[in-house]
View 1 (cartoon, rainbow, N blue to C red):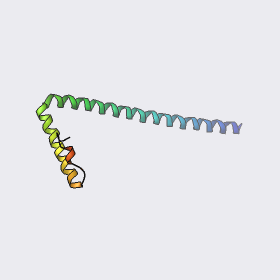
View 2: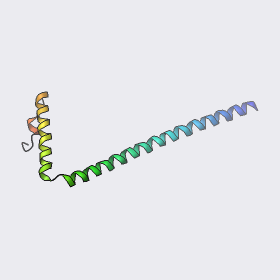
View 3: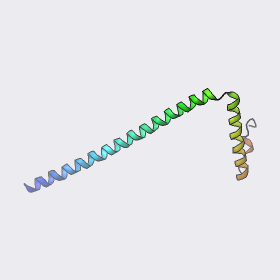
View 4: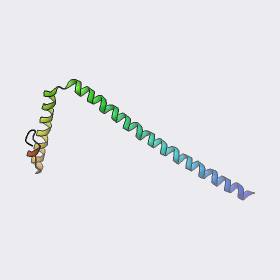
Length: 89
């Protein structure tokens, strides 16, 4: 009789551990899903804000500035930076 109780107790403990592990896995999946959803929403919001606030000329100015910064960085580091200049490709 005592052996049956031990077996049942061990089986119960095993089931509890398995359930806790499954709950943790599902929790992590839910958190990751929420992170992805929040990131997608933030990107959509940023795109809408930028498209409303930046006209074509401002957009080109930003692209040129970033391109020039990349060129300067690449020239300092010895990488081929001239190919990155806007309009030189």
